[in-house]
Length: 398
Image (cartoon, rainbow, N blue to C red; front, side, top):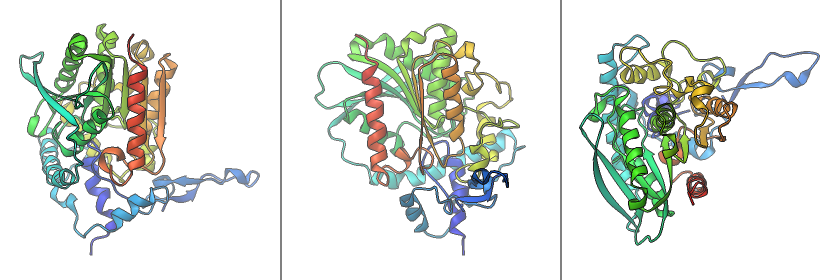
């Protein structure tokens, strides 16, 4: 019989870039280095820092609702449908993994679409613009039905590790319509992926598409009737949201962007090592992702390993000179997430560069729970939506 405690530990690896799955391990294992003279230093280490065999389902930090839902899942291991990848897998092997991951995601998509609320109060318009390479970029513009007057605007960039899925996926569609329902104009960007159905277009293709979309929205502020322009994205889309702001800062058009809202941004490309301050890569490894999977997505995005320290590819490596002058940022992290600390440390780097930046960590939550589990954690959805609406409204230009 399948060990259900391992079920999402494996399939969740690929969904890290989408925020569409989760997994589970004892909450606190071994004690930290103890001191007989100071018993207060006998602090349990969380996750796999304390117990390398822990799964997310056993980790007592996990939100009980998520544990209950996952404990009732049927037997069978979806990860068996995915090709095996290692730290040394070739570019072609990594592309095969991305394609299989997208197929699995698409199969799961139907269930999420069936649970979609009625959004008849939101209207959608499709607009096609021309990209830097002469190709077409589709934009999906959502706003409240019958809305009059100026609206704050969010340019939304979907997750998927910059490698797979689309704006039309159920999770991304539901998320942007939920935002629009609360009084925002939401512009979703169908950027070129580095793999999958919309690939294969390595860095900087997807970033260039997002930058083009931001510049188009900024140029058409009056016609769109918007009061602010906030870049928002989750996971791989969080990377692209932050990276687009970094790119704009480097190229001299950062004034087009009023703010950045990144949820679990995938800011560190995994090549050979992880900075020591990113404890979540040790604490939560295997819960929803592994280094092997992160390496596969990094290789697809940067096939020749040419951009390891490029801040437009991986904003984690941006220097203070590059960060200085960026617009305000809000970064949301998730306690059970492999890449939790990437966002927290990056927020400190922003603050050190004089950028107004706030970092929050959601207790007990897996990767991008608002999109992956909207019906299981409705109060989190409401809180994050309210935060985005408030942020975009606060940044309105007079």
